[in-house]
Length: 208
Image 1 (cartoon, rainbow, N blue to C red):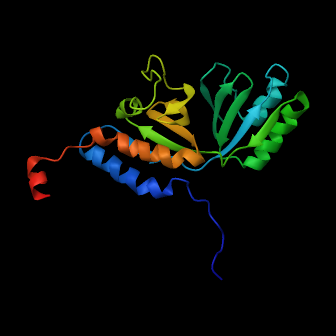
Image 2 (cartoon, rainbow, N blue to C red; image 1 turned 90 degrees about the vertical axis):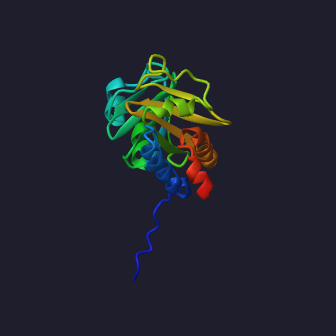
């Protein structure tokens, strides 16, 4: 009997080939810019007053230290923790979301906190290379220069007309966007790369 197991499909699967072809085209032209889909990952939204909870117990279940500096992210076991507010973080990683949610709730629930599985809420796109900053500047009002937005930074902002969670990486940027707006952001990125693509030569125009 054939295996009938249903596998999750990336919300932007229909854009994967376009991103791959675009990245190859840019690389051939010598442009240091690539766009790729982030693998699907589990996510938990954590809310708690950090002063009210046992820090050691929370650190053990999170798998690392939560960022306390506004608009930053830190590495935790198997993923990352992104600061969203004084009492809110987005945890992402490969740990089973249900078990992670329950373990976190056991620690923060008695202190008025909450942990909610939001794995289906956002999808991710990765921008790599020196050209990523220039590309984002077409639709993001933040100052993304390394001095102002270095690796380890995070911000909830707009890209075009869509809200995104933007994180600065050592080799570029990561965009986490609500799944319902993911198609818009993907199309925006493809359109915004127009000026980065090589222009056809006179001979190519004639042949066309």
